[in-house]
Amino acid sequence: MWEKGYLDSRRMNGAFQLLNSNDLLWSRILRNYLLGQSSPLNDLAAWNADGTRLPYRMHSEYLRTLFLNNDLAAGRYRVNQKPIALANIDCPIFCVATVRDHVAPWPSVYKLHLLTHVELTFLLSSGGHNVGIVNPPGVPDRSFQVQLHNPQEDCIDYEQWKKTAPYHEGSWWPYWLKWLNERSGKLTEPPPLGTTDKKGYPVLANAPGTYVLQR
Image (cartoon, rainbow, N blue to C red; front, top):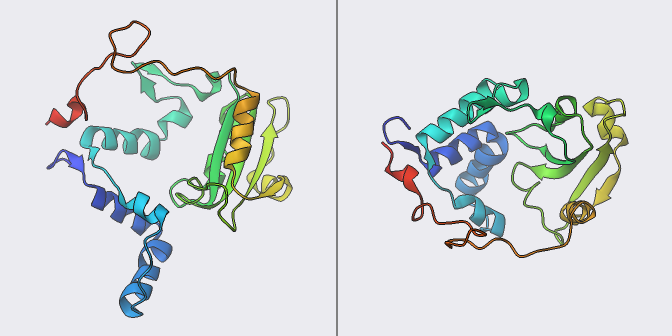
């Protein structure tokens, strides 16, 4: 990244494959190379293959502050020179984790219960890092568990939660839509983009932005 100024999408894809090498690397080598069984390119695989470059500064700061140093959880992550405290969130939270996520293991995501003091709906979806999220209705063999936690209640550990949280068949998207509708007002038109009107959002720069000019 230091030499090129960005992280190539192929290198990012390789890093994800090494993080979950049994499913994403070795099983494909056995099936495709040794057995000669080509896997069809489904919608999710095509979407996943459509990668993009990540700017050096953005990606390095992201890895160091949010991953290596865990600054957000510890109250050290800064925006406009001010530290962000998750405990200051005062609106309901809908948190989604996936059973086989090799990037954000769900027991780690579950710790959000310990970092916030508001109504928190925690949902655990079947699947992995991508499939568990890109999980539309109508796909077979999908399921999820979900449970609401109020700040006045005692927090249970993730293993106990897994044993007691209600189980549902199908996609979690309709449940999320229901959650949003119960907490939202009437639908309105979004503010226009690219206008000089004070009600809209003015154009800052031509796509893809000025960051691509940094060296």
